[in-house]
Length: 501
Ligand code: ZN
Image (cartoon, rainbow, N blue to C red; front, side):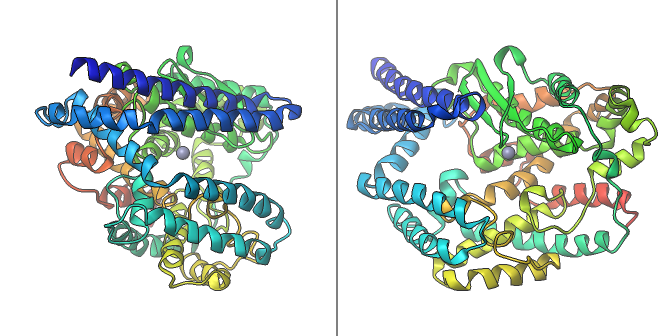
């Protein structure tokens, strides 16, 4: 068994090496590659992706998993070997159950659909993308049907990103959340809008970057195992345990852009840096689900980075760095500015309170599309109806309506949006639990110290990598299933104080 386990690990490591090599090429493409490299780069990444897929889905991997099964059945659930075989089998099935022909047809369609969307969106031309979206929904159904036995057609797609979550349970959780959020947004927006003009002054790029780097270094992001560069869309990428990078985007007239994207991506990165080193290069060596990943980026971005505690320590430093811009701006004004709540049309620009409404609208609509309850030609109207109902807004066009996110046009319809809101819900759940275990954390944050919080997260979440599912982590940490209560308490507490509700 020892020998077979070694054989499996070697095979997995080789597949992982190919995937990570492709990730390096992707990072380079979005940061430093000259435009002339684009054509060859696309091909090189496709080649590596294909080789990695072949290596991983080779019948030899399946045979090793079968041979190891009797051995791991004698082990406790949380034993490393048992977890390795369990998680590898899950990924192996995900990658082998979808026929190669279907997968390549879908990927080809996706690439074409993306091109059409990129052109149609600025032109506000929904009729151009509608046939592609219809086909995409059809492909999404076909892929889901490779995993029969589901309760809802979206379940297999949701399960790819957030294992164990189902359309019905997520829908119920979201319905509860919407019931609380819609009136909260109404109460907040009935008041006078916060003044965030202090954020919109000229802020030199080099100083913005320096401040963000200092903050995440204090958080515990390890720069000897990472670095930050600039890109158009900020992201985190991992090449190995020893190399987890982030990117950010700077706007010289908007202080919040680079700062909060840096804090956000550092949360994703600290999760990956905190996975036990022995899992590196195996299917256990990464964050466990989209939702748990987002819970970590949101925790460090919002619960910590947009808190009064954090700025009690950092605001004087920020003022010293930007005396001209911030000398006359009180901490309270700044704190209100970075937590301004407003009804808006664009999901990615939304604040903490309204953000989830955007996500839940998309989640409900994609379930309707997959179920066949909603036809693509009725989608724009359904979109506007929901925005009117939930946010009291009507987009002037489809560009900022149904065409605003790339997701439905370059990937499956279903399976992605729920992770953002699950992450927000879990961020509060985990932060709350860390505070219960260590009531000194808030005081430490006001002193610019994050070690206790970071250690707790590492101990309870990061080190396990993919060993436990999101639901298992939530149960282990809180002793109960996922609930929106701590998240709503957090929002009521923070925004109740800010808006004197
Ligand atoms: Zn994120």
